[in-house]
Image (tube, rainbow, N blue to C red; front, side, top):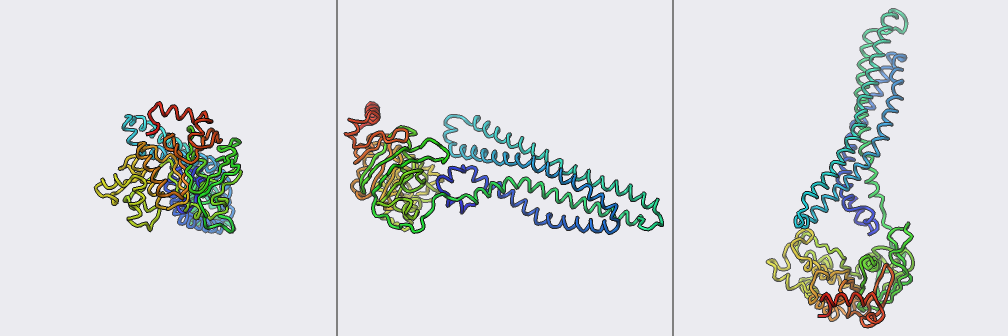
Length: 490
């Protein structure tokens, strides 16, 4: 399951939440393990014991043993009703487990915010509500499963009473007659009844475990059967010639069922080495646009070409090796600063690491740390500030020596002076790399060769800073508002 998750596309990751994947990897797998362990012991031993006991009972007296056969349909119908009614409840239970894990995950990630806003009581209530929902669903399911044991005992003790009654009559009334039953044979039949009862009890326990684990098994299979929709072509292209990018009549939707496109008729030409800014309001699909370039998603209609070749014709790994992307949500992993940066290039020398950190304006604060480049980063980068985390992620992306560098609002937490220094370093040190910068601040993109203004998934305007001030009302409004707010040029 874990290995298959590594092959998921962004669309597959969107389909399953983080909390749901964790639940399936832990709780669901444990349920399946317990069912398997019980099955390989009881499900083999109990049926064999029952078959031989039935055979022995029929050998002693076939007519009396028909009583066992008469109870089988009652047991079968009872078990079927219990299982079919309990299974949907267990499905709800495990979906609620996903929600519980999500609540815990959110709480732990945002524990500083929770404490800052004194919302511990609210978080406790949220946790208790989900826990209570699981308790009620489990109780409902267990009440249904609890009917299993009385049903078994009723059928088997009814068999014992009937065998005792008819057996006693055969002993008394049929004494000396052919086919009469002896007292010893009656005792043997009762003993076999107890054996059959014990075997059925064990089998019923297996059915209970299978009922619980069936919902888990279905959820596990969903992970195992999930396949990325992104595939290499039969004869993929392995070399990306340059960083030129071309969007040709591109339409994109996250869901195939949606009638509305997230990106609508996008046509852009970007030359290799150019710096392109993207600006627009929240929800204008800026991130969606750039995620199509390294083929994190596939276009719904149209085509995107990198280096003159459709991205769908490239070997996926080869394409992504040439595209460095600093995502909107920056992620650092537990380990030293060097170990984190070497995600960009595992064979990078210390000199290469220092060089890219200088470009990203990270070298200064790293050297001020007690361990320098060997400083340990806590999980999620909790021991560095937002701006420091962004600069480390930019340095990591630069270490790949990409032909295309995409910054998805990746300098929002740094001051305007540092932002300007980073852009100046890009222009001087990586002139041949195509740079795409998504930003909220006009100052971050106003020096770009071209600026794209996105509005509701469509290109509202396209040009340089001066051209957009003259012809784009949206751009002019953003610029004017930021100038008044003191976010203009330094």
